[in-house]
Length: 335
Image: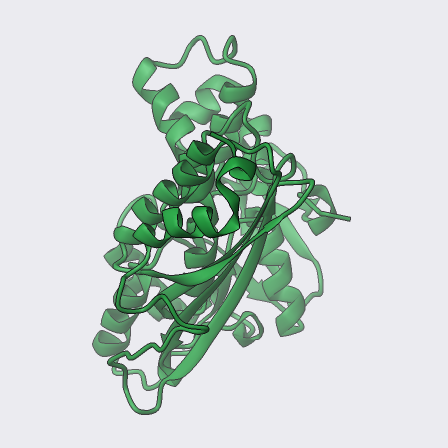
C-alpha cells in the first residue's frame, strides 16, 4: 500500500501508535517535566533529506529513523540537556510505501526508547522529495550548560569516543568488496556505527560527577557534537571562543582496525573529516578534563589544548608527519 492510497488522515492514524495517547490528539502537546526551578528549555531542529542524509542503497527506513532521532538527541547532549520529547515533520512522495513510513517511525521510536523520550506529535505533507524535520526539546541546568563559546586559553580538549567508525561503515555499505582484512564482527561494528549511532546523553551525568569531585560551581565547559566531523567541531569551538587549538594526531581515538585496514593517513583523515560519529568534543580546565577522561574511560581521551593563535593545528609529537592546519572546508558542507 502506498501513502496516496491511505491518505493524510489514514497515515496520521497509523502513526499515532508511536506517540503517547495522553499527549496527542489536540492542536498542540502539553508537556510537564520535573526539572530544577532555574532550568531552561533547550530546543534544536534537524532536517534530513532523501539522497543527502540517507539513501535506500545504504539505509533501511528503520535505520533512517534511528539516525534522524539520534542526530537531534546528540544536539541536546551537546548542550548538556535532558531530552523531553520530539516533534516530527514528515514530507513524503505519494508513491512512498506505507510500510516505509512505519519503518521510519519504528526506527525513531527504538532510538528514543533507549532514552525515555516520546514523540509528541508532528505533521505529514506531500513532497517530491522525502524529508524528515525533527524538533527536539530538552531542559538544561544553567550550571552545566555546554556552549561553543566557553573555551579559554589552556583548556584541554576531550573527545568522548572513537572517530572514523561511521565513515568506515558507510564505505563498507557502498563498497562491500572492500575491507577484506576485517573480521566479520569488525565489519558489523563499523556498519552499526553508521546505521545506528548512539548519542552521548550519558556524558551529562559524568560531568556532574566531575563537578562534584572538583567542588566546581559552576563547571565551565565548551563543546559540541562531532556529527559534522571532529575537525569541524574543534574549528567551530575555537572560532566561537576567539582562540585556536593544537591537536596531537597520536591521541585521536580511532578503532585499531581502522588504521590496520586503511593506513595511518587515511584513517586520520576519516577520523577528522568523516563525520557522523556523534561523539562530544569538550573543552574544560586540564584538571577537570583529566578527571572526566578517567570517568569516561577508554576510548575517551584528551587530544589537545586551546591556544592563543587563531589557527587549529594537527601536530605529530614523533615528528613523522608535518604540521597540518585543520579546516572546516575539508568536511561536509551543504553549500
